[in-house]
Length: 584
Ligand code: NFE
Ligand code: MG
Image (cartoon, rainbow, N blue to C red; front, side, top):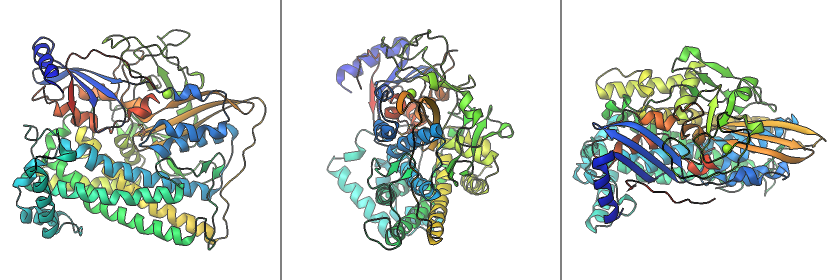
């Protein structure tokens, strides 16, 4: 970052071969990653959440009906997801059924949010790990457009568009002002794409900026605001439905939503899915790196009934990468899920009353901060370490897609097969489902899952409109809080994976509240048995060509789409990095 930093780095690197990336950027929140590099490969890795938020502790004593509005502020990226998990937790505690219209509206919000998240993650947060923007200047724009047209009939693949974008890019670079593209690892030996492919990706990067707005509009129309929706309530949603009255959710607004669904669908299937397959084919060696933990966990989502016993998308657990081991999670409050989750703090900056050698179930979870310093073999992160029946898990798009394939979900199988066939034909070698257990596989899975989500958006829209046509306009069932204690869990398959909120209510007040969040699963420090979390495990064996520009480490970390704000759910502490590398 500064001359001093660079000097420190060179001196220390000779001795320790340790690289600290702090902060990792193009993510949400504050993540530090340390790796020990030997012989050009990562031998040891640490992932550390560098801020404490404490949202769980401020929930105590509050009205459970307010929890969603507060916990939603955990994150500025997946804003909707904590609202959903929270109302589901309270509804589960009360065994409160909600109207199906409320499910459909919530489902559409979750889906639009997820599609937004995935498009932005691929193009704007991670593509620049693979795409050399400066090299795109050397491309022949007509050849690049011809390549794009050979892959897809997307209307934005014209020669005129490719020439226009390249001229615009020359304008940036010519003035020496790269703007959002400053500080990339341009010209790094790990960048392998031909100039034409780089230009293709830059064109779609800019188009994706336009298209992602359509997903946000859907969230804003249905959720009354984006980011941070305002329309959920324990018991349903606060959207009054009407076929023709103004100021409520009318057919006119729903038709606008439909138009944006179609635009997203077009982009995801004809651009995003294709680009991921193309980049995957050109970086086929990255199917060998980054698998890490192959115990996968996902939860079913998109409930189709008021209780959460039927879901559009399946979820469950895969043991050791073996699809045939798949065990489903079936309903809200599923015992197999509820009994399996616990969190440890042996390597986290927290203290458990009964000692740190054991993990705690979220219903009896504790959030008592205890900061030390960064201790390689002791405490080094604000994240806890969640486990499922004692084992660390990988969660997220890859887990979700593998579980859906294992469950026999046909649309997922269809998009996964199409994507892998395209990769195989471009790479000139058969690439199968096994290749998905990798850094690049996480990107492919995210795109496959996103295509499924676009289909589901249209289906949920159809379900809502068909139900309204039958005359059912109900969206809310009032909750009643009995005396005594109730416990509930709300889970949601959020963009980054399994999210669960756990609430203990005592006579209408929150007695305990724990959030076990996707990035907590993936970016967890070592657990009570010193087993590494998913980021840490996935980094082992990663190549590092130039430790001063650890592009390959960022590739694998970014493939998870980190969100540390979520993961630690409000104090920056001093740390003493050996080597500090700031990277875009
Ligand atoms: Ni802050 Fe999130 C998602 C949640 S964290 S983005 O998806 O919950 O992993
Ligand atoms: Mg938590």
